[in-house]
Length: 63
Image (cartoon, rainbow, N blue to C red; front, side, top):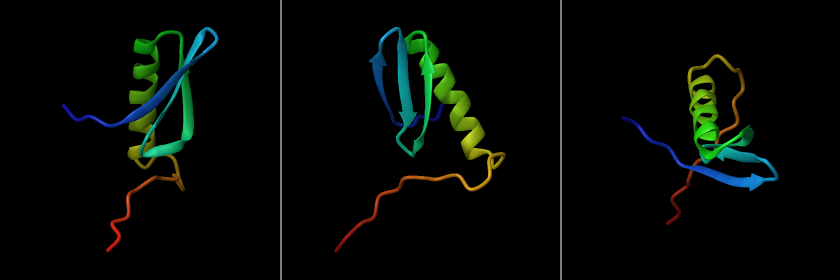
C-alpha cells in the first residue's frame, strides 16, 4: 500500500485537510476517517491526469 503526507485540522463540525504534495487543494469530512477517504479520492483525481494544470509541491535540494 502506498502512503502520502497530509495536513488536517478540525474547523467546527468538519475536519479539513489537504495533501502535502498538492497543498492548493482542500477537502473536508465529517470525521477524521471520512476526511481520509476524501483525501484518497482527491489524490486519485489529482494524480491520474484527469484534472489539467495541477499545482504541486516539491522539495528542492540546495548545495
